[in-house]
Length: 534
Image (cartoon, rainbow, N blue to C red; front, top):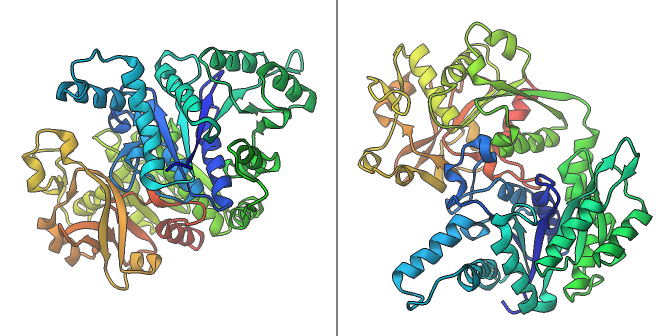
């Protein structure tokens, strides 16, 4: 709408400085003052969405409620501002160009030559303004991926330049840079920041706020120097020093007056509202005062890059904190796990997560982990492929079907306990076979999941294509496996449990996507509680 304010977060010097956390922190501070806020991410890669990217390339693929595959930063946004994101919150260069090319093919440009300016930049601006116009937010925060100076980011930064000109006071740029400390000289160096700001200025963008990422405190005189050379007011030069938890960042930013500076710069009275961060501070107090550990093992095949399981690890941090425990998360490579070393690797654990994923690699190690956990009654949580592995292991070692498998791994198996639905088998486009986004799940009354949720109906997010094969359902139930959650529209199994175990639950969906700091997911809370009390 006419009074929506737009904040752009750009980065300089180097990648991985934490633009996503800064964007989420700004959103948290503004929301704590009563403003409605959403955050979107512009990624400069050519992929239409991150759904086809290897987790080693880009970390986990996060999924919104409306079924859009997105960058992992959207998970940070949701965990901080406690609001759902949508397809419009994640935009890539690939999607921008695809939209423009489709319009050109459709004849929308009436034969005109299609160019970066104005057609690509207009499409970028349309996507920026869409959230404010469609949902009437007070603030739309847009994180620009990449680093100022990257060729891939230039159309996005040109669009920011145009919007700053068009929107005037309602538009603001926050630039995050790095201030290195040279140990030999025992000095902080601001020259990289100066060059990064100069690069933005060459593109026609003057940052309104500078946030300086650092491992050391930046003295006032150094910040004043940055202010002088970068044309930014001294009070708008903020340091972002390393902290023990990302959840402390909003409080550090607030302590330096970042929210007040932003409000003043976009023409709002910073004294008209007061931030309410009591729940956030209460969480941090629990996080920092916990002394006893809970030791959780995560069994997966992408453990070399821990961002591949970012939402799971953050959900466990939240659940451990609310259970008054400090999380000790042990990453276990499923390719290096088997029946012979399972006891050595798994017996010290209080609980085990069987991670999601796609494909054959590392699958046998997951079966070994599940068998050991089931036989030794260690609280175990299987997510997506993790649930499917629980089903396969049960079919092999309890039902006696030695070659039971998923047709994803073995198309010829006689016991296809995990399979595509008949309606999926005719689809040749693999993307079309995916079940994405939130689906309804009806919980079995008095089951462990129903008790954890405190309700009998939930909606959870999916990202998979293979399902439990209902042809085998009675055989599993007769042997003691309980189908504790069902999608009422398709009769597909959403949750399995073994009621004779302390805590043995598999979910076809991804509960980690909907766990936030202020609303931790009930299944994670229940799982960690069982691990604490095992």
